[in-house]
Amino acid sequence: MCCSVKFVFRVIAVPLHLGRMGSTPSAQQIAPPILTAEEEAAAYVALNGVLGDTPAECLADSKLLFVNKTCWPCRVEVCRATHPTLRVHLCTADAKGGVGKPFVPKDARGPWIVRFVSTEDRDGSSLRVLDELHDVAFET
Image 1: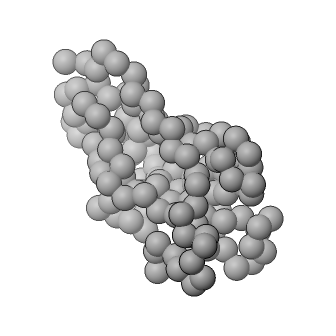
Image 2: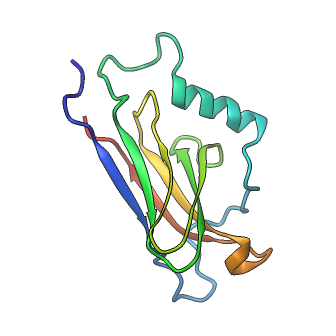
């Protein structure tokens, strides 16, 4: 049965950890602003699916929208929770209401991790994770 309702999530980039010095939601190192070859392959599968691997339900209308309500641009990274270091989507959301490129996976089965990373405009070369949302899922 196909989804009859288009699920649209607006993930608002409001860093929760800015007030706590030295506090970041993730201890991992910040990756470069481009996908590696392995990430490109994972992104292709997430966006286009693999023959026989997509769910019977039609989740193609599900998407994540990213709206930045902060005063600085930020980078948005999306990963499957099962592979938290393998990014499948990258975009930049401009400051003060900027919208990043929506993430529209063919197979929306999650959960997903959405990570907000500072940009050079704000932190120079000392990029950091501003906030990280775990267990992001599409409703079916």
